[in-house]
Length: 273
Image (cartoon, rainbow, N blue to C red):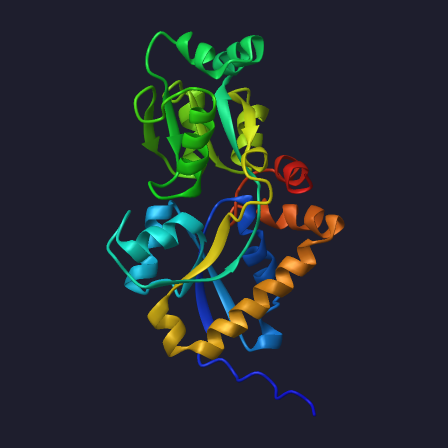
C-alpha cells in the first residue's frame, strides 16, 4: 500500500527571516534552487539587522518563520529576552560553526601566556566582550568558556549585545576587546587584521545544536501542512549542503549583498571546516 501524498500547504508563500550569518545557508540555498516548488512553497527571504528584530517580527507576524538562535526560542517560551509567547522550533539548521575572537593585542597576550585570565589582566581594566542576544547560545558559549578558564563572566568582564554584522567594526575601532558570534565575522575580523579566533564552540560542546527554524506555535497549529512543507524544503537544502562542492558553490550565493555581503573567499573556508 502506497503512503498517501502529503497534504498541500495551506499557505503557498512564506516570509522567512534571517540574520547575515553563514548558518543561514539552508534558507539561501532553498530559495536559490527553488527547492520549495516540489513542496508547494515559494520563499521570500527577509534579512534582519539583529536577533531582536527577528524576535519582534516573528511575534508581530511580519515573518512566518525564521533562522533563529535556539536560546531565543527557549527564552521567549518562558518570557525571558522578550514577551512570553508559545514558540515552535521546527528543525535544527546547523551544528557547531561559532567562535570567540579577541582583538589582536589581547589575542597575542593569550597566545604568549596560554592563560586567559592573565591575558585579560594586561588590559588594566575590565574587558568589554560582546555576544549577540541575552538568551542566545553565544552568551552561553562565552560565559562557559570564560568560567572554564578561571574568569567570572558576571564580575570580571563587561558584556554587551551587538548584532553579528556589527562586531568586526566595533572590534577594529577599539570599542570591543572580543566577541562571540557566528561566521563569517571571525574570518572577516582576521582578514582585516582586527582580531584573531581564540576558540571555536565545537571545542566546548562537540556537535552542539545552534540555529533552528523558529515559528510561533499558533502559526504551526493554523498551518500544519505548511510547516511540514517548510521542514521538507529545508531538509532538502541541508542535504544539498552536505556536499563540500555544493558548499563552495553556496558560498558565492551567500556573498551576495542581499545575503551576507562578504567575499566568498572569507565564507567558504570555514563552511568547509
